[in-house]
Image (cartoon, rainbow, N blue to C red; front, side):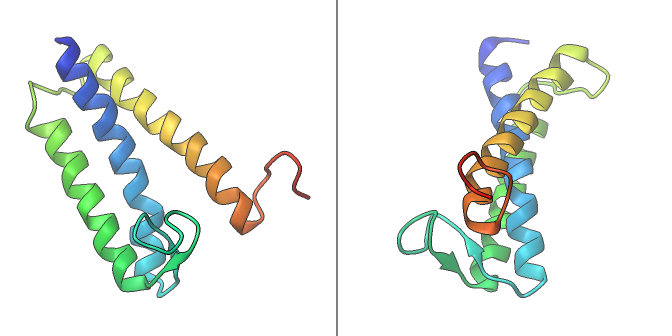
Length: 109
């Protein structure tokens, strides 16, 4: 795996993870933060915008994992690299969105 493939797999994992809350919120008919809200990332976007944003993240994550290099789930290096992207995006999302949705963020009860 070259370093460029590693970056692609890391970002692919992060994008696949980011797709989940947006797509699920959108499909449930609930508003959620997106980069298109006002203010970006803080305000709420409609369920339709979230569904589309989630799908775009899913498609981009798929493209980065499956069409760059030769990603293999049987390759420990490939899987760990994508998994680190998943883990980092999960923690960043939990801390960031937790501020607005009652999550366990320092300073918030």
